[in-house]
Image (cartoon, rainbow, N blue to C red):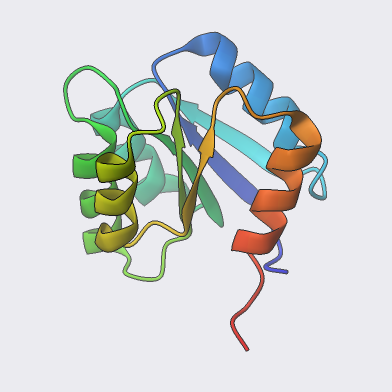
Length: 125
């Protein structure tokens, strides 16, 4: 698995950032950096260079897909996992096509999130 030293959480809902922060700390206790919108998230990404980004799909202003594209334009090797309350197939496919590693629904249980993140962060054979 990719070593996680720093994780960036980009979500406009503070309680979701708090929950995800608690979950990702179980993956080796990385430093967690937060942003509450896409523009701030992109700036934090460029300043912090995290190992993993958990990015909300639906945010005011610059949405998750736009932010994903901007992050990948800055670093094509960025590890970005989308986080959504909607399992809208079209949006998820759009995110995967744009370069996201995968997605996690916000209502997913903690252990399942850990399993998904672990699988997304496995180096390809």
